[in-house]
Amino acid sequence: MNIAASPSNLAALRNDFPILDQQLGKYPLAYFDSAATTQKPQSVIDAIAEYYQQHNANVHRAAHALSERATRMFEAARECVRERINARSTAEVIWTRGTTEAINLVAYSYAGTVLAPGDEILITEMEHHSNIVPWQLAAQRAGARVVACGITDEGELDLDDFERKLGEQTRIVAFGHVSNALGTINPVRWLIEKAHAAGAVTVLDGAQAMAHLPVDVQALDCDFYAFSGHKMFGPTGIGVLYGREALLEAMPPWQSGGEMIEVVSIDHTTFNTLPFKFEAGTPNIAGAIGLGAAVHYLNAIDPDELAAHEARLLALTTSGLAQVEGVTLVGTAAAKTGVVSFLVEGAHPQDIGTLLDQQGIAVRAGHHCAMPLMQRLGIPGTVRASLSLYNSEHDIERLIAGVQKATTFL
Figure (cartoon, helix red, strand yellow):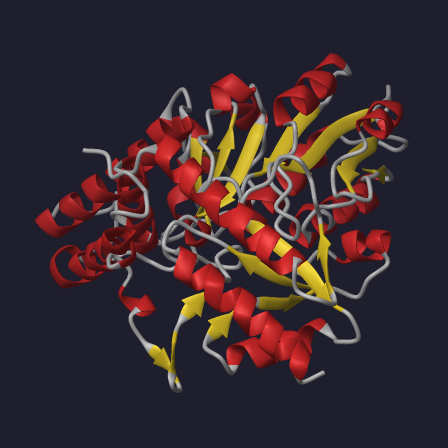
């Protein structure tokens, strides 16, 4: 059954998230920090609690009923994720702690086997630090170098610059599906086609896309796709690396011990099959089950209605803030998800964030783990209001009024 995310039944969706029904001082909570972490619906909270209350056991390792149930739930969550992203097999769905660990896995295991001195890794100026630093370290280990594609003043990739910098030495192209700091939706299918034509492997940071856009890894034709559970209504500490099975098979293990082994002797070890080869130790069982529940929740929402709802909120937020005297919007790409970054003349972003917090309005202020982007734009950071399906038009009205009020104190 689909749930149409329209104003008439938005209250029903919002009521699924118990944390939103609270006061901050004398104000009700208006939450605009979903790009940092989304709130969790009751169904996800219940799934995690049920696991601990009724099924808690380690997976894959015992003959008793609790372990059998836990294993079944754990692997059912993996299948749920596989179906959501249209991977060919659950062998291509690796549990990680999140996007950061997933990218690091590729940077150590895959990049460590293919990079040589003089090779290049092409990223972009709008990347999150988690899609920059692992590649810097990989390049240092191999004697390779990191090259960055530029962006326009509007916060879009400079596609001409991308083509100029994509060359014979490019081995890996790593970029975000959606910018966490600006909300820009990148032309990922075009980027992947260009990278493949140059003989490069693609690594996508999908952390900001999964809660807003349909993601089909086969249609994208990407090689690796990384994302986090907590940014798509699931728990923290769980994430996914999708990888082409042939690439994963050829990659050496990254971490060792526990689940990733098959046979161990004193002087030799053989490794487990995919996906377990990359899942050393006891996994985050409750986290995986919670992520499965989050995927079930998203599957029940009509994607077209969700997109229309978020587009409506984005338009209201953008137009409303643009009319506040002294406010400058940062990032005006034609294709965006629900992220609005802005500055207030004469005010540090942190001061605006604090003044909004005093009115019960939760935003994020700072560089958003995208310092090279801020350097490119010539600013120290922004105030970021990030939207999700549980936001309402009333929330937007409160945000705009809150910013107007904050300007009167400055």
